[in-house]
Amino acid sequence: MTILKTSVAKKVAMAISGLFLVLFLLLHLAINMSLIYPGKETFEASVEFMATNPFIQIMQPILALGFIFHIAMGIYLEWQNRGKRSIKYVKNKANVSSSWASRNMIWTGLFVLFFLAVHLYNYFIPFKTQANPDHYALVTGLFKDPVYTLLYIIAFVLLGIHLSHGFQSAFQSLGTPREKCHKFLVCCGNIFAFVVAIGFSAIAVYFYFN
View 1 (tube, rainbow, N blue to C red):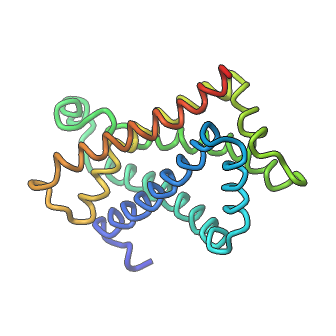
View 2 (tube, rainbow, N blue to C red):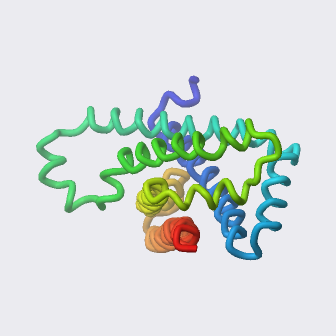
């Protein structure tokens, strides 16, 4: 696409797709929290709403495309950036000029992608193929598996690390004044990353031990 030929345009598109996924994470966390409180009936009602609402059904493929685009663009930009800089310089200066999260965005993103594939196999496919599935039992049952639960927690901790840099980076790519807003965006990004990592992980731990 001609509009994505410049590096600035690619970063803007990356930022928009990332913030779109941030909204999905907030909705997903809110629904998953209902597993604990109010409980099964509310969670089942939420899943039923998501499965039957026409707007949600339209948004699902858009979300999937947005995620694929975000991953593909992230890999492309990382490859492009590495080709433009000196290996020696990166090794000597990386720890000084950037955070661990920013230097490892591609790896945290790829691990989250790997977990998403596992999650889709364990939950989304049974949800779509089983007749009248018990969604609550399906989700909470997965958390009885120590391997899946550990993988789940690691994935969301790494996602939190990914978000701690990605959140503020997305707003900067969209033109937010760095001097005026950088500290505020970093703070907001860290809070959001913490909420996502701890929120999803706490749900897994709760059902593993209960």
